Length: 332
Length: 304
Image (cartoon, rainbow over all chains, first blue to last red; front, side, top):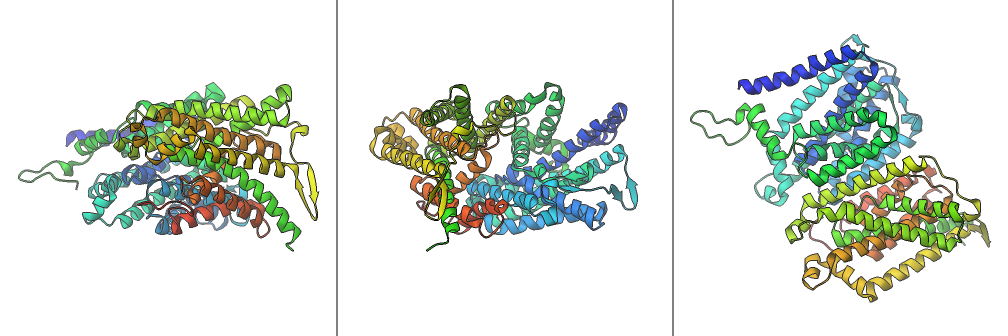
């Protein structure tokens, strides 16, 4: 109990006191930028984790759903005067709506066929971003000048933006944590292991898969809105197939099915290229090499699923511990 | 009589389809023997184009030699790719691990990692902009046939592809190598028990498939005169679509779907702006997956 509380408090202190203090110490816009980008990608990786890691659906179009969120937030903000407070949930909801439409026909496909279908849909959305000039401004992208306006409170300092992003990301990751470490998450894991068996045990496979896909798209849309508001400019290239692969790499390097691992993977893959900036052009090659060696030498990921589940049960989920006179059989 | 414009689009679409077919064959052969998707195939195509380009700028050989150099570079790339990205993940060869999802995903990701490394390395060496190709080598001299105008590249691509397809068909159906490739793709473990060297067969498959992909790369590079490190991405996806439409492991199916894809893509430009023509391929992909999940020409499988 006390240990779990300590770790939770420690993470909160790290995210909301230590890192801001460090950022204030350096006080350079560049560091704030990296911190917010890392937070956004942690959310993206955590949302892909729900689909690919927990439910076991190889999803190759995640960046496009993230792009839907970003474009919705940016276009609403730039052309229709809808601010951050309303734009953020709207971005998430529209990404989720598109994911729902996409999921209806494709969710019955198995493994590699599903991966191919998501790749195709991701590419279609990318083409829409790139070529529907009337709506998305085509390759020139959308500029978003209005800053973050939180319930009438104008937030324009770098530190304030970091706090808003970190807050939204922390709440979203908390929700994803509760979803993937619960009875619900266990049901999703059973789909991944053997969907026919899960279906025989009374789990509605298609509905569960659609739910996981839509929830993940919702958080991807939230991440997109955060991206649009923090960078102030989005273009189709931010949502290219290679971004989907980057997010997938975070999930794989961190560990399929392990939420803490995925967050570490996201941090690593955002911070490492920045740390290697001085090396110049070679850094992307290093990312590729890192990905390759992670698959070869750490097939379970940096923080494998089994140890991650043990960690989550011991430290994050007190509900798991058996109460006196009860059998500890599952998550609460 | 068809409209000359439509006829011309058909000619262009046919050469486009042939290029996709050359690439789709590599995808299909590799998927056949290993049951995994090789995501680095697009980079093999780029490597073929760059190998041809370097040969041209180094000593200016005749076109046929350039094509053979691209073939050789592709074969070498395929060999290296198999050794680096696929071989290390085939540590266990029992049936369960051959079919396991974890292994398939590992090879998928490792081929992706290899493609990132290859593309970034090429970008570092050659720069990300278009390379200029010696004008004498471009295969876009116009030829007038009746009311339509095609370029000699259309004929060269058609001829080269037909020769390659014929050769491949002979190889697969008549030669002992082809027999072992077909055996491994039918049942890897069974082939092993019959004394077929599966590792060697897999390498040969990679070499053949990648050589064809590289050939497609240099042909397109000379046809459009545009060679750049990320050129392999879009044709790679198109070839992938053709493979899925053809039923994942059927070579004739993949070729026919690739030609359908090329034709419909070039015909679609008469109805909509050409920037949207990529949409046709993805629409085909989704429609195939939803309505013909086992592919248009594929054998029936248990679950898709």
